[in-house]
Length: 110
Length: 107
Image 1: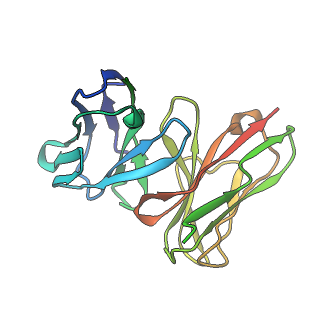
Image 2: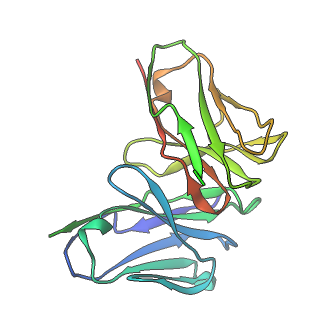
């Protein structure tokens, strides 16, 4: 099946810094999503981005489907950005079934 | 709109007991999913449903059962609980709407 790898596994930032999180996947996909899990466990969908670039405030994401990777950019990080960021891609046989990476754990210090 | 609600929030089971995790959504989404998340890991799909009366297995279905009699409800049944089922369980609908999770411990 499709493999999803995220890097880095852990990241520590000072408030105000920028960062880039990466998601590599092993096969072509029609569904790719980024999620944030806050320190209390709540999961929030950030982007649905099987290809192209999207922006939402200080967050943006780019997926280069032909090269099988996606990037999540966080600019001017805030302490509320802390948590785990997951990339999930659609299974080849059913793209509504998501295969999840292990996540990038982000800590933003004041 | 309440979105996706799950009950209970926490539960401790003894080995061999059974329980049902409840999930309800009010967004009229056809697709619903049950995931488990073990510490430090991503989510693993247990079961999913494409609509009332239709369910299918995900990556880790063993030890679980589901039903989908209505669009709104998608309960997950654990039979004969085992310590390996200690986890956090999330229900979700299409477009990435998640419930708050149920933290289950089996001892």
